[in-house]
Length: 497
Ligand code: SF4
Image (cartoon, rainbow, N blue to C red; front, side, top):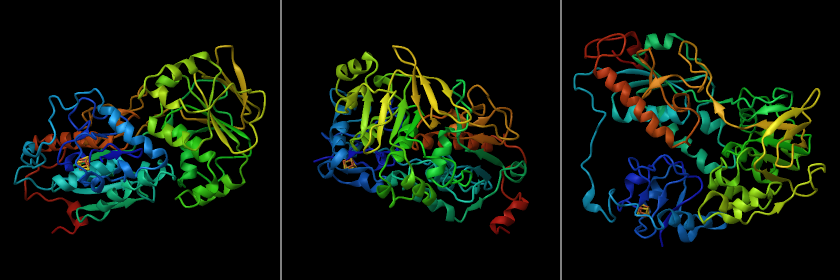
């Protein structure tokens, strides 16, 4: 019996380095790393030692034989990744006890190098992976800043409350908050003084603005960006308890990424099942008294290229309240014609229905409707949004909806004092170095755009820290030289003499 990696995999590859037989792939450095929904365990070579399960920061790894319910599918999902694939060719064969490379410490700075003072702005995954790298691999002193009064960033305020395993990685990050070389400053906005007080500043401020749809009525009251709904159920201090009205029986969500699926799942969940989660109490109370009976997910693309990852779809489909609207013949054809393992194939067991949009949602348990090949044409209503005009092969159709959520992607917002690329919604940079601003660096979504899950930020942050250290050694940081014996007022903040 092998172990298997399941839905909540964060892909930060903590498990890869502890596996004694190198049977977890794609691993860092391999071509697929960072592009797959999960990492996968090869059942043919796994020796069931359990080391990966102990190392996993989000409790995503289990003995395959212990998997139950919707997680049962992950035994097959892990095995399918290796089916017919010579994955180990040119990488390493397993078992490979003899292949361990000698340990290396690539972050070692010259021995007479005085500790760097680095500020990291943002306590989400990208910021915390940068902090981890700095604290574990250098003697730098770190000031960790967040404008919010509670640390955690995306983990605290972005991950859905019914994903406790994913949220668990926040505990791994929080261990560093008490590190003797870290000073945590919460509820503080990053101002220009930060750069003056530190050798370098890493901005890991994320990307939470909604991408514009460019359709009429987009800004009507009742049309909400996804970040508002996500912040509402997570108790974000910027989002009030009344931000998301639930008095309508239908909500349309534009988009089918994992955030769109999170929102659909939470709005249609049994409130009793959410009571044991860290959902904001005000949001739970609203869900208990809400009237939502249907959430419609509008997807511009077809099921073969839907934006969600299969693990998130499986989690939603396993509840038994997901329906595929068959308004376009291409949808059934894509699902029925998909080969095992292809994205559309995961919809094969999901009920289908030619939904009559002139009727209200059916009575009974709330449900989620996936409408592929359909883009929003306009939002209608006066003064509030009351309907979405959505495209289809037989013409546009009006879908009555009391709320619309815009979940078609995120973009970053400008940071005062830093350059900004309006086109990409990112801060222009090279390997994390902010263009034209020595000493300023970026990591995470504000650096590379809003793609990749939690684990993708690890490699991203390491690249940024690597660039910062290379600049420090080369004397490219502004301010004082980095040789010992040169002090700075900030040393006093850490009790240095
Ligand atoms: Fe590797 Fe052991 Fe995990 Fe199997 S159980 S994947 S051998 S670490």
